Length: 130
Image (cartoon, rainbow, N blue to C red; front, side, top):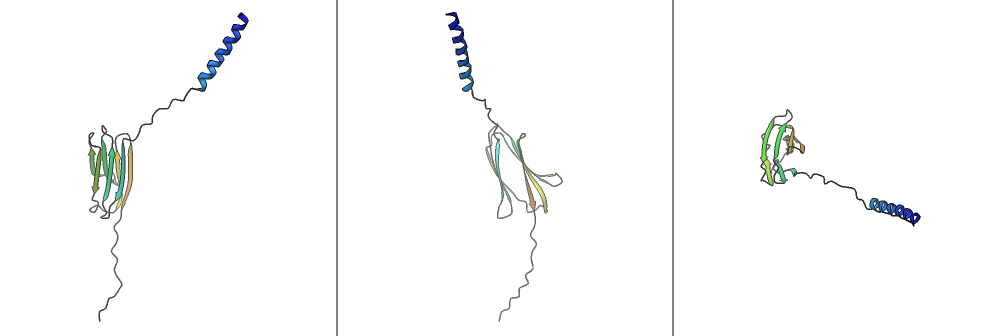
């Protein structure tokens, strides 16, 4: 009887070890999602449109800076705001590179903006009326 119990115990323990490891799943931790989403585009009038959606409980800052790092525009979304639609009139700014920076303190989105004024072209066409 003693000779039969020891091999059964070994076989049963191997069975348990084998089954417990085959059903084990790797632990996955949820990745932190972005606290805001932004969309940036230009309008037909030459203005910059910023659409911003965010989670409540986070503050988000929107800044427009020039190449020297001077802040030209600042807008802060409070913790209670969830959306913002901003239209920036850049017609009075001189030509050159700018950066639109959107940040919540942890995540930062930078978008490069270049302003170029189209030069007026002289017309070489002659119109004659008879």
